[in-house]
Amino acid sequence: MAMTTTTLSAEDKIKKAIIGLQKAQPFFAHLLMAMEFRAKEGIPTLRVNAQGKVWFGREFVDKLQAGNLSKDGADYEPGESEGVVIHELLHPVLGHFSRLGAREPQLANIAQDVVINCIIGQNNIPMPIGVIPYSKYDDKSEFDLNVMMAKLGTDGKPVQDVKPIKIIIEEVSKKPWEAVYDEIEQQLDDKFGKGGWGSASSGGQFDQHDRSFEGMTDKEKDAIREQWGERLADAAAYAKQQGKMPMGVERFIDSLLKPEVAWYELLAKYVRHGVTPDDWSYARPARKSHALGVYLPNVVRESCEVEMLIDTSGSIGKDALTRFYSEMAGILSAFSNVKMFVNFGDTEIAARYEFDSMTMKDLVEMTPKGGGGTNLCHSLDQIRERNSTSRVVVVLTDGEDSFRGQAKDYPFDVIWVISENGISEQEMERRIPFGEKVKMK
Image (cartoon, rainbow, N blue to C red; front, side, top):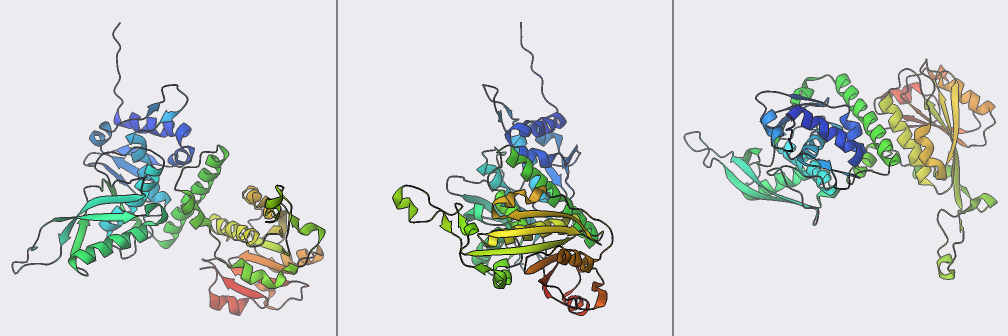
């Protein structure tokens, strides 16, 4: 009996790629659930926008090699179609639409493609022939760039129409796209002189970017960035649970969650020094114990206890809360022995948690409580009534509070950390009558 074969439509090939990645790459698959793929006439390859909408040309997708189950059926082996959908996904996920600035758009697209194709290559996912290549062996991208010369003749036409040049970017896995852009620009300047080149294009640049993001209000842009930040955090947690976090993406997540405040310096005066029974830790074994062939606990001579008051009033968005979580993780990482009490409050404390350096990973499981008005001083009063032994309370807030207009007499110091989109530094000095003030940038 003859075997019949079925050719997948372009739409079905895209769907198969997303479903197949559920097993092979759950991080990407989780994020792809938020993407929308539609076929469109006149699109030579693919076109993506900041919200995650992708338009693709059927003819292009038809030619892509699809992924398949491995011979033993245990694993899914991605193909070019999986590489392409991941490529389009990473442009909005990594915020490529919001950080263009005054950079040349086509050259920026190329720099972004270099970084994205590096991530895809690190995870051994194929990409179509003709895209900007990445060599995993030596962590390098090498490609020809066609440059339109800006120098004009007396007739107003370019002296040279198109001149291909070789671009080499080394240690790609360590660089953000902005650094790659600067390197490409420098290589062009070295060859043609400062500003001696015009708009750029590349045979390796196979997708298009919908720049309608630039016409949005700041509020609309913030909402999109906040939404992708939430999705990114969810996808990371989902993939880590399965032990399948892809290579190359941790550094981008870390940069998004990196604390902005130098907590060790800020809290140094609240550090306890000396040795108590609680100051022994196996987390960092004593060096001398290695020679004995056994692990002995190290003496932890610095410890810090801090109360955190997290503003969960209605004016605090999820993006601000994500940043607040990052700062709490920064405190737990700053000291080898930390005891942290986390209070969520709006007009009063609605929830309280306790953490130390060993339970930092559990921060993400906290459920913020609140969402009403703002009366942070009342929450501070509640911390005082609890007879906390902490010498300092760190308040993470946007500063949208009356602060009762006068200084308070607390048995602890207060450090106010104001979110990036919170009140200005001038407003901080005018409205907050007591404590130390820090503005997140």
